[in-house]
Length: 202
Length: 200
Image (tube, helix red, strand yellow):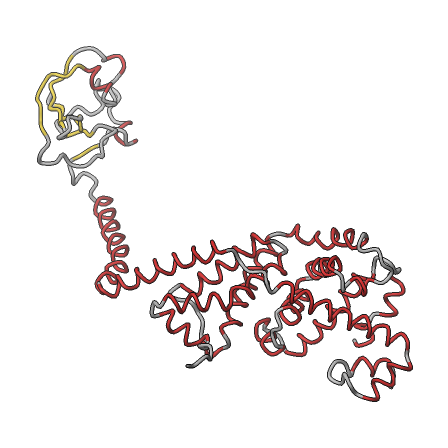
C-alpha cells in the first residue's frame, strides 16, 4: 500500500478533469495555511473566510493561472491570498490605526516585569498575536509566512517578488519591532534604541 | 568579536564558539539574544496554537457546490461543442444586427411607414391642424412597442371621438377636443389598441 501523499500538481490535474476528491484533498491540505495567513494579516475571521473562499474559487475556475513550472501550488495560493489581503488593507485605510490601538493594549499587557516571560503564558501569546497584527504589512507578511507558516525563505522571496536577502532583512527588522513593541510597556523608548538589534545590523 | 560582528553572524552560526564567547562577555548582547530566543519560542508557540484554526465547514460546502457547478458546465459544453461557439458568437451577431437595423433605420426613417407622434419632429409639426398628424399613416400608440402591426392585428373602422384620441395619448389640439374623426383602430390579439390610422 502506497502511503505517499499525492503531489499537489497531480491533484490539480485531477481537479481540472473534474475529480471532486482531488479538490477535497487539495482543499483539506491547503485551507488551514491560507486561512491562517489571511487571519494573521487582517485580524478578522470573517475576512479570512472570505479570502479563503475566493482563493479556492480561483483554483476551481477554468482559467486559473497556476503553472507548476513557475512554482508550488502553496506559493500560488498564498500569492492570491496575499493579493486579496493587500487589496483589503489598501482599501481599508482605517486599519492603519490598529497599531495605535495596539499600543494602548500593549500598555496594559501582563503583570510581570519581563514581557519575555509573559510570552510563555497564554495572555503573552495573545499579545504577541496582536503585536504581529500591528506590524507594518511588509514586515507582518514575512513574519506570518516564515515564522508562523514556516514557508522557506526562497519560497517567501518568490511569493513576495523580492530577493531572498530582503526577506531575511525584513524578518530581522520585524522581530526587532516585535521585541520593541513587547518591551515598550515597561521601558522608555530611549533605552530601546540602544538595545535595538536591527540597528546594530544595518 | 565586536557586537556588530556578533549580530552579523546570526542566525547561521548559532553554535559558533567565538560567538558563544562574545555572548558570555557582553551582557547587553546576551540579554538581547535571550529576548530574541524568547520571541522565537513565542512565535513557535503562536504558530502551534494557530494550527487548529481553519475555515468553517460551510466554506467547504460552498466551494464543493461551486466545483460541481463548474464541472457540470464544463461537461455540458464538451457534450455540445457548438454551444461554446454559439455563446461566443451570439453577442457579436446580435450587436451586428442591431447596428445594421440602426443604420438602415437612421438613413431611411420613413421606410417602415410608421410614425410615433411622441417624437419631437412630429410634435412640432403643423400647429395649425387640429390633429397634429392628420394623414392616413398608421400612428402607433405611445405605450405600444411601435412595431409594425402584426398580421393577426384586427382593424376596426369607426368614428373616433377626438377625446378618445387624447385618451390614447395622441396629440390633439386642445381647442379641437370635441367632434369625431374617421379612423381605423389596430387591436392586438389581446384587445389592446396598438395604434390608429386616421382616414379623415
